[in-house]
Image (cartoon, rainbow, N blue to C red; front, side):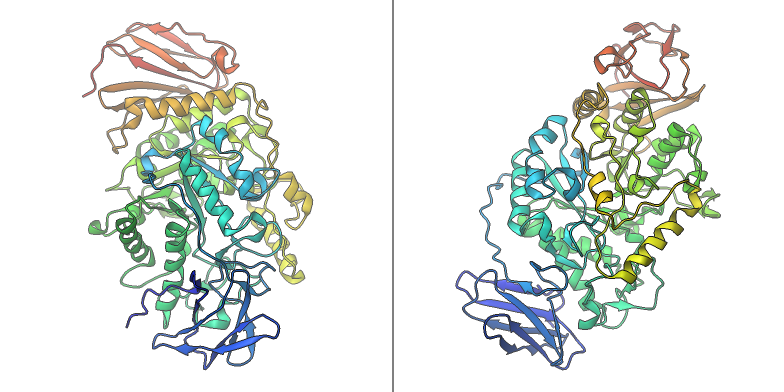
Length: 612
């Protein structure tokens, strides 16, 4: 059997010959319909594992086509590369030719990444890939080394977060063409910026989802949160697994994407001997060898389970990194005072200290919110496998009003949050606009066309917010105003000094030897808490830094308990960051007290010290 890993869709050659492949294992017949005048139909031949194929001549880019199933249903290609008329229209043939100029690019290791998450439609006024290209110099000046683009797969309507995609192989037509995305990747690489693409393999959106017409893509074996569970371990699952593996390889290979962020992998239900994530990792490692470029897999999930990023020889799936929600929860709860919803498990500075040490906060303790023991120790992992954040699309967009921290926190508190993130040993992720204090919300928005679906969506959002006890009307996801309100204003002086502080911290993180150590239980030491001040040390490469984070709204007095003099190298309240001004001398002697401004961060270096 040679069909286990089979490329899908339409593959156009330079000579005008085009091969079409579609998986429909239970269909009696499948035909290709080329939408020309008049329409032309070609019967397709079936292989043992259910792949139907036909090759025809004289094909040009832009030609529209359908597949006809059992002589009746006329449907778009599940692996369509282009849907010019949207999710209900025909598929279009494209050329894969593009003149790349990134031959010298080798990719980035996770430890080198300063990630900037963005949504294509709201990041710029243009709302497309060309708009992102226009900001790359700005992002480079900020110090960003990787942009993470929320899902771009074709979804219903004009605007959407992207998690309702139903054509995983097709770029959303309102964002630009496939070549526009390739140009974005090419231009990013030219500036030393990697591109991370958010992909969704745990479910598909409800509108325009025709996969079930082709074969057993879904199963009722599991109860899924958003839609029918995908069939990754039942009869005919090999074709389903191939579909998603081919999708990942397409982005990483044809589009030169550097990393994939896999959405909600905990909702990928798979009891196979080899989990889909392990199999995908294997195939990506083989691709790395072929193209001689680093390709990174990032898992997103809210279960404190290190299996996804643990080595295969230790029983893991071998993925490169994961999002760590609990760093966010611990920091958010401490700095805002919120303790409703899932924040009820947080609110103590000790929990932020736990995340600094273990990445996870819950490593087997009882969770009040989950009402059970939760989490496991992240053995066999390092900090450069854990992505932390102060804000992201979920943590803002799934609030009732989509409000950012900049609408409720002072400038000094925003700088403190930035320091907590960027001085931590984790891979930092910023959400678009965070670096200058964007005040426009980031709300949940859709543009579905089916009324029953729209009504269910609105009701679902109301139920979702009930356990947070937030007051106010739930914004209508279908509203054009909700979408427009979510666009960045690009007022870079929104919070004076904040952008420059982010820029400085990022540069410091990249260059300071102690910040380049990511070994767990080695990079962060001597964590202590006193009077709402979190103190910890960063060690590595013969360098030691002492960090003080004052979460109190009052000044705090501390004492240099080191046998060496300590020199202040960063003070978030300094006048250069538009703060109230330093209250501590540049050098503090052993045993000497010093002051911390309210909601501020200070970093000391130890004079004449050699790290052990």
